[in-house]
Image (cartoon, rainbow, N blue to C red; front, side, top):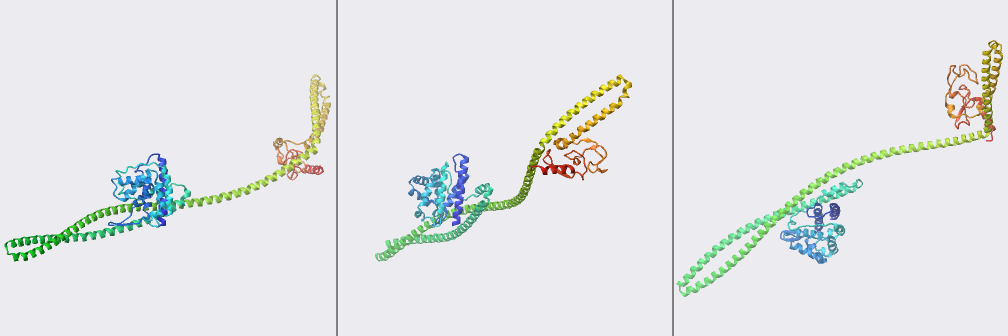
Length: 564
């Protein structure tokens, strides 16, 4: 009973929720042909029938929820109008039809929730109609009455004059609610499965109850058939007895007429004896007539009982057909439930596989993120080390510029002065050459005589150029060179030997592009790999550059004598 109450309450929730949502989406007045509304009335009928006490009648036990609904007019005076209109409907012949009409009129009046609450609050009156553990006597009935408040937003209109409410089959169609549950969110899959299993259990329980009722009805039909045969036999016996009594009555009439005629003709003594016999015959006739009347009354009673039995048989056959149709529909719904259960199980398996794959993918992604975090930490450490090296190089560069900045500026000034003198001397040299060429053209004989002074002047100029080149080379050793000039390879004639070790074959003998790895970045000299293995930071760049061994010793002495 508790499981039935829970299942009925869940079905009431589903039907009320679905009816409200569909009615609001539809946006119009509902009529009796609307499928969710019909299912709502079927569910309410099952709720009102749950735990009803059976009343014994001539046709057997009768369970009708019209009796509790009639009590509402005593509790709520406004319900008297509904009850009166239900009783005045001409097409209603059974209490079930009247109860269905009452539910429809109460919903049209938008007071179904109020009437149900008033009825549930009077449990001492309901105890006459319901069992103690029925739905209307327990807490689930109050919950359903509270849920019915939401139906006040629905406008319904029913025409019950042409509608056959007596013979409707009250079977719940679970397919509407199963589709609704299947289209909900994926996160509610477990709740849907439990709800479907509860519905399946309820359907199976209802199926067992229906089978039991069908078996009871079949036993009643068999008993009625036996009683019908007995009554037919008794009726035949009564008919035979009536015929015999009629024959005896005719015979008595003939005897009485014969006695009367003989009394008229015979003497008085004979008349007295015959009068006594006549009185006895009259008494016997009265008894026979009274017996005949009793038999006729009994026959009429038997005929009326037979008619009632035939009517009851027809109604039972109709009820059995309805129960069989309901049983077939319930079996079909049970098959649909099983198919839906298999489908949900398959979806659950597929979702489990998807969850496993996603968990594996998440673990791989976590491993990759951990690896990336480790690499990021290593890169950050390297970046910090590089930043510290850059800061130290900038500090060394700053100290180097502080130490040798004045010397570099003075050397640059000297270089500019020397370049200016060199340009001036070259200009004078050109003018002297032009003057001598002109003088040689004018005096050809003197060309041989003046060749010696000409060569002497040329040697002097070359000596001056050598003197000018020496301070330039010294300035180039201390002056910083731009990076773009250092990185450009110069096409020059490399010497055949290293400038330091003077070994043959250490450098190529043909003109090639200068190899920056063999060039000292300080003095710009060319050395072999063995004589230029050291690296030091220079003012021209932050990174350590390749220098020759003499420059390395010279720079190390300068760095050691610096203030830092």
